Length: 127
Image (cartoon, rainbow, N blue to C red; front, top):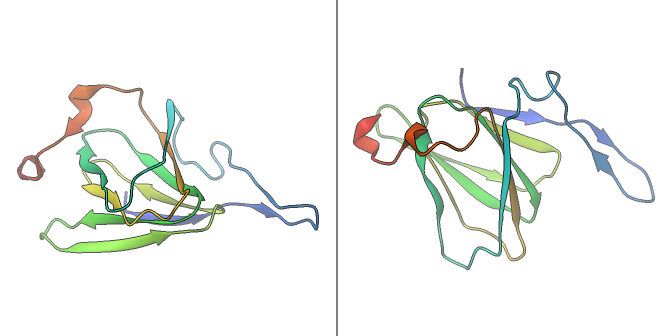
């Protein structure tokens, strides 16, 4: 599986827009855990790890932030998430960190596994 930007359905309406997701159409895994980050102070970084087995879909519900990914060759790429109708699918064994949070940003994370500290890779050298 590769990193992939997924467009989520949009229902536009003059009263306000609606976006949804459901298995398996938009989320290619069974959702076992949902969490979100918010009120991240300016200049701070979240993440800085990979998962051994879990897949993750990251969505910017509000505001924007960058997801920085580390390639197997040591290269980095940055994907700016700023649209609530797009999600970034991050496979297992892919190092990620979130940075450059805008004011009042909210990042939503859908995971294929329940929280388990043993599934975290916290040292890049372990990839």
